[in-house]
Length: 84
Image 1 (cartoon, helix red, strand yellow):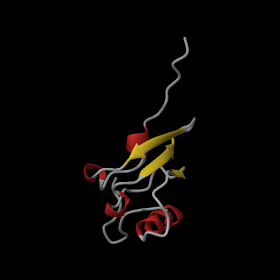
Image 2 (cartoon, one colour):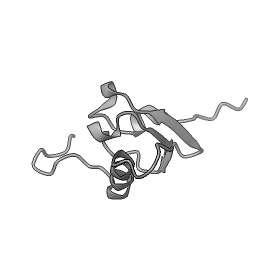
Image 3 (cartoon, helix red, strand yellow):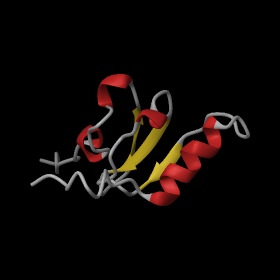
């Protein structure tokens, strides 16, 4: 089930603040680590690389315009157990 339009999209506040600070020009673009797979990608995230934790390691995700509106976890994938 999707989130109510009245509430708006869920974006972790700390993650959003770090991205907005980089957009202001005070910092150079760097990889931002996050565990928040449930956060929705906003247009402010475009052009940034976000390292999303998949339960085992951080997967770098470069955000493009086509990803806006999706969740970060959709692009991190899940590393299954590939041991034989």
